[in-house]
Image (cartoon, rainbow, N blue to C red; front, side):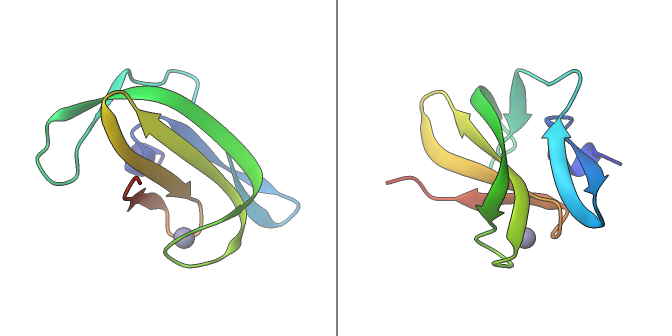
Amino acid sequence: MSDQFFGLFERRQLQGSQALALGPSRPATIPCPETGRPLKVATVEVSDRAVCPACTQLGGGGYVSFVSDLRLAFACPTCRKLVWVAGA
Ligand SMILES: [Zn+2]
């Protein structure tokens, strides 16, 4: 059920709303959504108060940054997928 986040995060029910927790065995890389090539994960963070760039829901979410790649991925428990955000 956490496949959509590649094991980086797990979905949790928290007082009736969706939240995320860090997955217990996180991968070192996840595939690029465009090329499928592995992207090396740099940091993984969970936030209780984040706004999803896709559905604009305020709630729990997670951020993933990558080594040598300016994109960020936002894990949205409402969209149930990773939303990719272009880096600066
Ligand atoms: Zn969303």
